[in-house]
Amino acid sequence: MLRTNRLTPFLLGYRLYVAVFFLFLAAPLVAAAAFAFNDSLFPALPWQGFTLDWFFNPTEPKRGMFYDRRLLSGLYYSFVIASCVAVLSVAFGTTNAFLFVRGDFPAKNFFYILMVVPLVIPGVILGISILVLASDTANALEGALGMELSFLRPGLFLVVLGQFSFITTIASLVITARLKKFDAALEEAALNLGASRLRVLTTITLPFLRPAMIASGIVAFLVSFENFNTTLFLVGSDAPLTITMYDRMAKVGSTPVLNAVSVFLMLGSGLLALVSILVQRDKTAR
Image 1 (tube, rainbow, N blue to C red):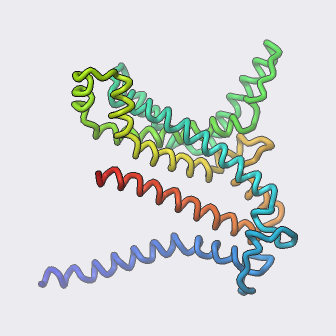
Image 2: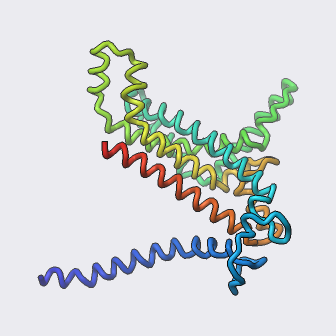
Image 3: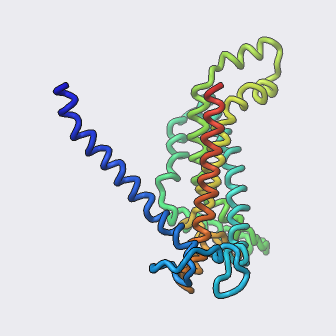
């Protein structure tokens, strides 16, 4: 009883800390979401009334996000880029997982560390490095062979390449952690029963890895969708949503339509995160 009384102030302090911490995280999101429904030209107090104009109004000065061509174009390019990065990251992440879990080759630990390095390199450095390398390569080939390699100039290809350079590491780590839990005896039993290696891979190993592959794909999609630092140095005329919103903020300033976009992104991110949790929970329950 005495021990419980001594711990009570600590527990109360800890719970208060957790509450304040999550309040600190949630308050800016709640504020941004609230101003998306404010019937005012500026995202600021006082509250002028509830409206959905910043989502669905087709005319100025309250043109909604679903009628703003630049924002919709940015949303489209972000979706295309994020989808490409997610697919590539899962594919290469799965390959990397098999390489580092099943493979045995010289300097394996060194190459594993080399794979993780992009996570600790600032996105600005990655963006500048890839831009310089791609531009120098394009200039050299153009000068020597007269070849115009437009895909090595700022544009969607370089954005995908830049984001893939570090997001694939995240997918690799997630899938590797899952593969380490796999019981290789299941594959050996299937092979002894006459199954081919391809059939074992597609019917036993990959289904076991599917929750991690889906989860890493969702994480890769979300990280790519919201990436700004690396994208800023590699983007061309086809700007994704983060760059479009930054450009709007720099030229016009903050407007409630940007808050409406934020609400849309928060709901979409939350839905994808929920899907990831449900997929992994379903597999764990089985």
